Amino acid sequence: MSFHSTKIDAENVRHLPGGVRAVPVAPSTGKPLLPVLTILHQETSTPGRVGNALRALGHPLDIRRPRFGDPLPETLDGHAGAVIFGGPMSANDPDDYVRREIDWIAVPLREQRPFLGICLGAQMLARQLGARVAPHPEGRAQIGYYPIRPTAAGLKLCPHWPDHVYHWHREGFELPCGTELLAQGSDFPVEAFQLDHAFGFQFHPDVTYAMMHRWTTRGHARLDLPGARPRHHHFADRAVHDAAERAWLKEFIDGWLARQPFSAMSEAAE
Image (cartoon, rainbow, N blue to C red; front, side, top):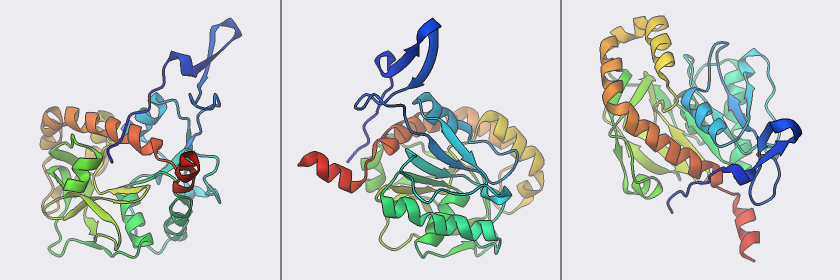
């Protein structure tokens, strides 16, 4: 089933006396929209374009960095969904916070809440589901824009996929058992997959122009890895491919947050 957009309009925003604009409210209940749990991995990391899309829909961001001691909630009852973003570490690292994040993904899976893993977050989801995460057998990396091919399932979910998306990784993962492949790649075959309300993207729809400058400057050594694109190609390719990726992300985020737990859908049908 395709995603359907959920819009926030003027009638769904509460206004306080004196012209102060309050947080948007859900049209069905009149209650403030729940925050989205946002898990980052570096002190300077931001949720980028994904965060912008969530805020545009009216959802506050509950930003946490478990690497620096922030706890993760025992339930997502107080959140609209959760996103685990990328980082320079590996889902195979022995650090305690990496293991805790992977284990914690069982919470949105169990509660059937919207979950999105981006790059490292997708690799963590794959690990939680029992799939192997490993470097490319020939040591190749994807750093820059690379083509993807949506599957029939991916097109059914979102009909307007971009043909190139931004990457920054040198590890990939197998398709976890019981999940559905949404998009394929070349050097790393699994680009996007889904399990019910959970999604994993190997690529970076979150990257902004400022983030691209920062990554290609601070991480310039990785541009020498086999398969990586030269720095100037990142910006030239962005001029060609970014509009399609941005439009696709909005379509995806709108529908992703609209997903309800199966139990809630069953009750609504009675």
